[in-house]
Length: 241
Image (cartoon, rainbow, N blue to C red; front, side, top):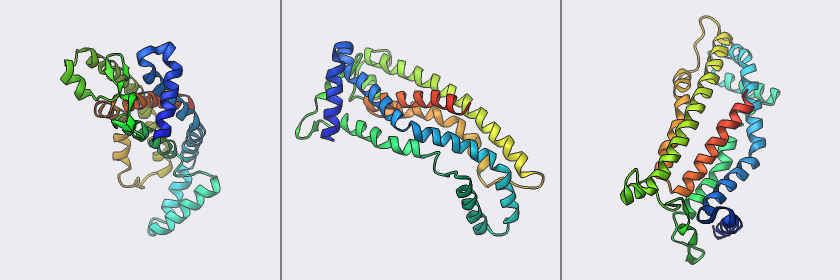
C-alpha cells in the first residue's frame, strides 16, 4: 500500500503545476487510463472471443441437440469445441478481473487515515470542492445536493448517466444480435439454455449500477470507476463494431 501511495503522490506532484488542488484527481484519471492500456490486449482478445462465440452458435446448437440427454457429454464436447477453435470462455471476464486490484487499492488508500505509519496526505486533496476521501453522503451533509461538493457529484452523475445510456444502447444492440443468432442456430423445437433469456434482458441495465457505485465509494475510487466505464464504453464501440 505504501508503494502505491508513493506512486500516486509522485504523480500528483508531477501534475500539480497544471491542475493545482485537483492534481491528485488528475493523477487518478491518468492512473486509470494506464491500467486500461495495460489490459487492452485482454480486451481485444475478449472482443475476438465474443465474435468467435457468435460464429460457433450453430455448432453449439448441434452439440446441444446431439447430447441433450447427457449434459456431462455436452459440457465436455463444448470445452473441446472451444479448445479446437481457440476460444476461451473466460476471455470476457479477464479484463474486469485484472482491474479489481487497482480499484481496491484506490478504495483503501483513500479510506485510510494513515499510510506506512504516517498521515495520509492524499486525503487532503480535492476535486473542485469535494475531498477525494469523502463520499456523496458527506457532500450532502456538508452543503446538500446543490452545495459546492454536491455539484461535483452532480457533474459525475450526469457523466455516468450519459455513459450508461450509451452502454445500454450498445449492449441492447449486441444482445439482440446474439438472440437472433441463437434463434437461428437453435431452430424449431429447441429451447435456449435455462436463464439465458432473463440474463439477456438484464444485461443492458447493468451499466446503470455504476451510479450506485459512484454514490457509495470514496470520490477517488468513484473517479476510477467513472474513467474506467467511460473507457469501456468507447472501447466496446470500437472493438465490437
